[in-house]
Length: 353
Image (tube, rainbow, N blue to C red; front, top):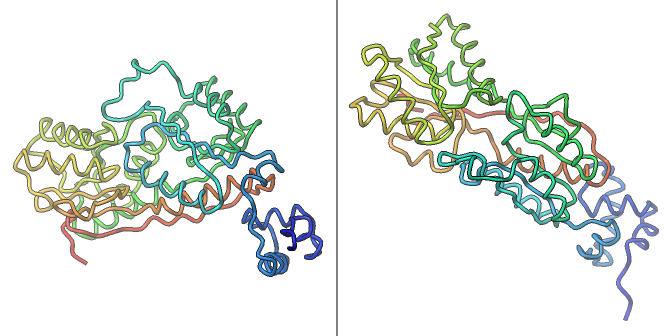
């Protein structure tokens, strides 16, 4: 019985190096189509199936990716992690999720003895080949020196990729979301529906996603010559109770002077605001229309169905995993991610398709 073909034999039959065969087995995009086809033909002919364990031993890889995030209950992270795990498995990698519990509507940081810097050190103890960082400390406008030092030290040992805005003080890799385009699209949509008095709710001061979206909101209003009313911008948080609280504050401050439309930072905040409207006898969308910057699961089953922006997190998750794996193979090259947020028109804005 003929022995199973080896990766060295595949390289010889294909006329390429062992490392090139390895890149094809790891789905690296840096191999030409001609070479990839030649190698794949040999693999198919000899019915070669790579051993995940053996590949890990040869390259001193554990086939594990660490994922650090601040709140696994947040719908944004739920959808993102699901796609990351799916894509990682397709590339024969497992994921180890580190939920720092340092964010959330019920979070109490005084109960936690571990900082995010602690988690950056702990992740290496779990023997990972690379790390994805999703939100948390990295999203703050100002980063602590200890966090910058810890993240840069981790990146020296294994590749670290952040889904977030590029930071010059950090050496790690980044996949950036377009944080502004969706807001501009929403303000344009509301303007087309006849709204001029528009407010913004949700988000948190000192966090990049909030700052970027509020800046884009103010800029869009100015471009349409709409009034920019600071009292109609209520920054609270990213969760359902925060939306409820923001709407209540607007009503309590000036019940006779309310915006006719609101931009919520995400679907959770929009849902909370709609509940508060109901409690205050305000109709949505007849009295106040509402739209959201970030679509979450089941937004089309709310009452009313939410007009929102699909940020295509599934695409971001896939790109992040593939970029990280490429870096783990020592071949990372900076890539411009073409990210196109998509407007989903439903009932909460008062428009129909």
